[in-house]
Image: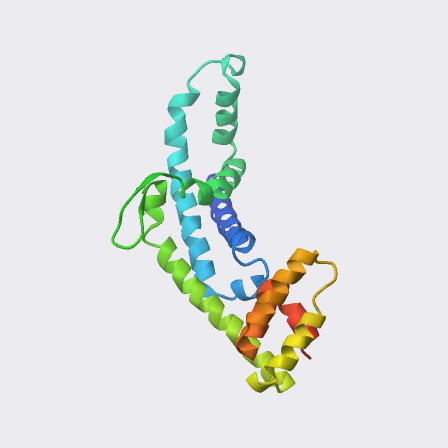
Length: 216
């Protein structure tokens, strides 16, 4: 029973760090859409289960490293392992926080039918990570498109108003951005072939709040 808090903490930590990793690497401007995608939560839960398996195997793996003797006789690494062994809260937090990174370790890749197959701990994620990420991309795209369509309907604009919308968007690029960033954003706006794609570019580059305040 004493280990239960550590397992719960490992699950929650792995879940939270997976969501934060998605936000930091792919969905910085669209976190509000990401958090409403069921696939994101299922993916985070799967990494939480990986953390539970790692935590379950932690004590048997470090037991031979701890050994006997007094604390003064133990090396610094061994003393740290003893601390983790005796503290389920700290052990659960560290294992949960590190789970996402550890299970994505690969030593090399071999050719596969479509994509290279990683060999290493990352191999264990193949049954759930790639398919869930594909579903997540689709769910995120549909929520983003739905937001853009709803905003266009609210301001009663269509593709016929695309030139006007482009001018409006370019005039409202925040001046706090560097000249290079502003140029990149302008190119993205100029490349939009529909009103929906223009608003989508705005969300991905500047965020949904900017779109709501610019097109109202």
